[in-house]
Amino acid sequence: MPFLVSDTSVIIDLDRGDLLEAAFKLDDSLVVPDLLFERELDAEFGARLRALGIIIESLDGNEVRRATQLRRAEERLSVADTFAFALAQGRQWTLLTGDSVLRSVAEAEGVAVHGVLWIFDRIEAAGICDAATLHGCLSKTAAHPRCRLPRREIELRLKRYAS
Image (cartoon, rainbow, N blue to C red):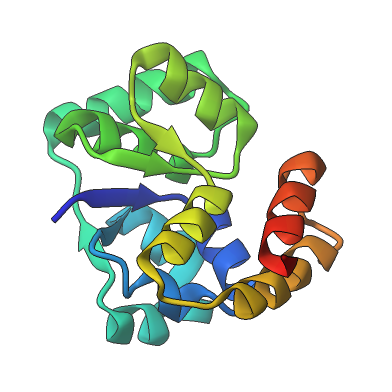
């Protein structure tokens, strides 16, 4: 079972689109670093994420050092984001992020990285949700004022889901 290390933005976008439960039906395990969970997710999503089966992982010493190095080198990243990166890199797991800086760092470092639209694609391919449901979910996610997903990619998927 593949492991997907998520940052906070992916969890929030999935929740905004009412796809959080569907994401946990994939054959992947969703993982977050303990620090990220405690600082950014526990208060609002904690009980629900635990019930869905999220895996909360502690970083080992080398991973904490890597996160610290990255934070010093790239101050635009939050501590939680550097922990997600270090966990994905250290364990050779896939990183899920909606943060362009974190994505760029992951790509430069050879860490497999995807965003929330990739999760939409995986849910579609697995037949977990039908096209009409995905259309509604993506429309809802895209309508949020803080949505940072690429408009062109959103439009391509909405057209596909509508046909």
